[in-house]
Length: 441
Image 1 (cartoon, rainbow, N blue to C red):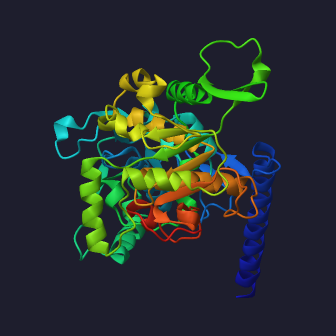
Image 2 (cartoon, rainbow, N blue to C red):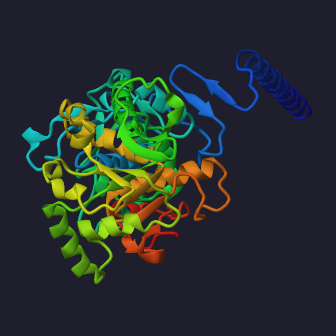
């Protein structure tokens, strides 16, 4: 027994020593091959990225060998951006790379043959998205998948019985065990915009910041903004006049650029029918606004200096309606695509690209005025709020801040529109996705 005991102790000591030597060897090997860099602690393998970052709620990182596929993303531009962000955050929860989804170039979504699918990278920059969102979410290509035949389908539930809790439970189940072993999980069912929302506004804001338009589309937006900026104030002696600068001006010092206000004017008939029904359902009168009311409230923005260019972002069906350019007082210079002479730029592209250009034009405006029940307006207000936060603005609701936004459907001071700052502490995107008149300012 004594001999056996000594042998066992000797064996245990030998095993322990070998384990310690092996552990030290691995640590030295790791330090040599995967040195850390200041400010970014990352180790990269061929099929796996391990990132220590406060963004992640798990200890692994965004895997490059596990993928998520989602249904084609449909509806308006900003509904599609929200749907894409929700799909990205779902992939993040599952610790998977989101395979590049198909967007929709048209507004048709019920008739499958009219969907006009368009690849994500035809609208937004693929590589830049992954660079900007590195460590938070990741986008992949179908060529990254090694086995396309063994795909696990995960069907999203629907109806009142499919609660937020059941949806979250389903996601958690597919993030572990044998379900997680599949290389590809494909979610089938409804459009991601209609999925239950499990993420705070700040997470969505991070995704939106990573969405940069392709160079071609960005250049088209630059052309439109340049055309707006070409409306200048010419000062000659004690007199001044406003004109469109169409050529090189020899005496450039006599011309001063004017600020521009972008107004997302929702007054088309189908919108008015929708918003009237919504007002009845929600028992409010702060959703619909007539053209006259919008003009009056824009004119009454506190502290707005004139002359000022007013860019009207309107539906194409209103471009032949000259009345939208009427009723503005002296000092307010209204323009829309046709009057600016840029409607030809828009006509080259399908609906989705047209909307993306207009979105960028509104986003860059000195002042933005929109409708808080419009997803288009709401996302612009969110991004402009995020810009102010990035600039360390101390009082987002102050009068002299850069990137101010207003909601014309909510009455503010002096019969003007209400100041609009997105509440970045909200636990979900409900107010932005479906509208609200409870805006922060």
